[in-house]
Amino acid sequence: MFCPKCGTDNDDDAKYCEGCGRSLQKGIHEQNMQSKQKNENSGMSNGVKVLIVICVVLVAGIGLTVGMLLQNPANSAANNSKQDQVVTTTQSPDTQTYQPTWHKVAVYTGPGEDYGSFTIKGNQFKVTMSAVPAITYTTNYLDVYVYDGNTIGINTVGSGTLSWSETENPDKKEDSILVSHGSGVYTLDILPTDIDNYAVTVWDYY
Image 1 (cartoon, one colour):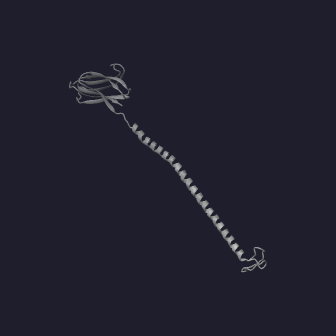
Image 2 (cartoon, helix red, strand yellow):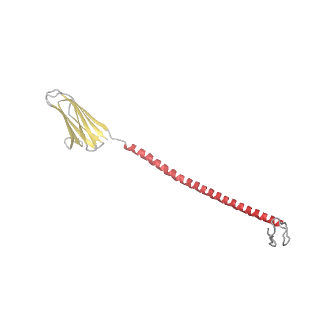
Image 3 (cartoon, one colour):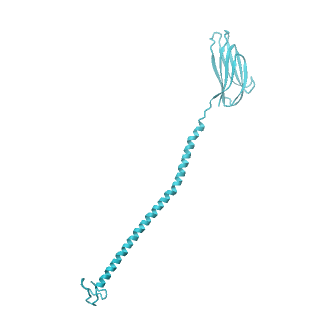
């Protein structure tokens, strides 16, 4: 053991320095205190390091949480927008499912001649006709003419005929006239010859 005062090398169990006579017990006590302080300083240093690591982890966790919260509103808005688009997509076909159908516009019946004007809304219309001939043993006819406008004999856009020969059975016959001439006013001219009864119907397609 070295004397802290004169530096003499003494025995480890010596209580006094052989060179200067100083008590070595005090030196041992001072060395022990210094060693203890070093250990305490080392322990405090390690504790500070652990505390720093914990702080870093907490800060990182808070930053990650804030980032996720900031992203959620954007995601929610995007999801809502997609849902709106889906709803719009599913509703739009409903507005396109309408299909035009045939609507009855006018009906003409009788055995005699007749005429009449009517208004068409759609791009096309049809005229259906049926008739039963009178028993005359001669040729029987039902002629139907369709004119553009309200004047007979001008601008014919369609016509149809039902006929029976002299020897043909007087059974009911049917036919139709399809006109694709757009909307507007049209006129029918019905000319029966030896017809017992007939029915002529106008159908608008819209």
